[in-house]
Amino acid sequence: MSLITAYFVFLCLYLDNAYAGKKHYDRESRYMPPNTSNYCYYPERKIYDWELTPIEYCKRPCDGKPKLCHITLYIEQFTTYGVACLGCPEIMENCFKYGCISANGYPRAIISINRQMPGPQIEICQNDTLVVDVVNIMHESTTTIHWHGLRQMDGNQYYDGVPYITQCPIPPGNKFRYIFKVTECGTFWYHSHTGMQRLDGLLGALIVRCIFEPLKYLYDFDNISILIIDWTLHPARTLVSGFTIHKQNLSPETILINGRAPHYNESSQKYLPVTVFNVQHGKRYRIRIIGTCSYTCAYAIQIESHPVTIITLDGGHKIKPIGCDTVIVNAGKTH
Image 1 (cartoon, rainbow, N blue to C red):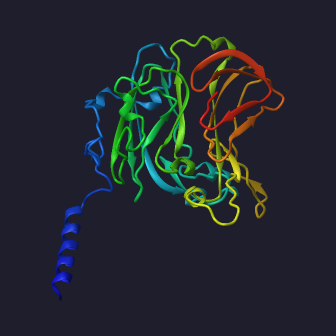
Image 2: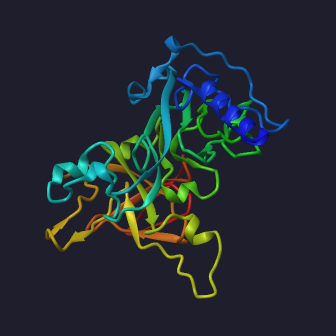
Image 3: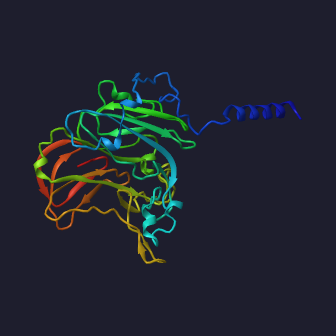
């Protein structure tokens, strides 16, 4: 055995022993990823677990008493219409199993959050502090999360989620804790700000309810959020990383509403389930619309046989209520 071969075998054995028994990521490690730049800085904020309120308990009537709202987001390479969907739509209940992301019925590589697409909806109150542990369990990609529409002030700029600008990206197998006080209220969303991960499903809704809502008299219920996602049959990196000599179509194949779209299965003569909103006759609903579009310029949205009144724009900016029959939503805009 040559000296080089022997050294290589020794190195492999050393690495195997060094990583023996370790998990894919270390739950006990610090919440900050390793600094890959001398310009990365994170303020020290010590928070104890007993101070945290699980995110499901932060969805509440806003009484002006702020909470520290906590959620963990696991970022993972995943697929639509995968094994969890086995039997869907012939067995319709399988379409709603955990981990079944039906989308438009075609298998496609995606990036999921907690094996959901879109990711879990976050609902908090104005002046709550949001504590989000982002765990990157992808194998080869870094990631970050940007909180779209929120002004990160008073030291919170380090949690804005733009890699190499406000933070170091989160390497594979590492986690990062976002901590910031949310002083604004309205309709926002979160998404990856790394590469084209947002186009592959790394996004979700962020609803911040106002302590005092002056337009509350205009609606009876505030429980409907619509994420409009333009969707292609192939991962985003195969479409926009370069152009062929032939004309390349960057138009989406379909539009997803909260991650679902109809797809007719000729062999079973059944449709995939679509997103359904149940309403009561005669009641008024506030519908929060989030345009996550990437490939298209704008959407024209209509609710059949129903008038619409627009009351907010771009997060929580109040406007004089205006009636219309069509709502135009551009990329990144919310209503």
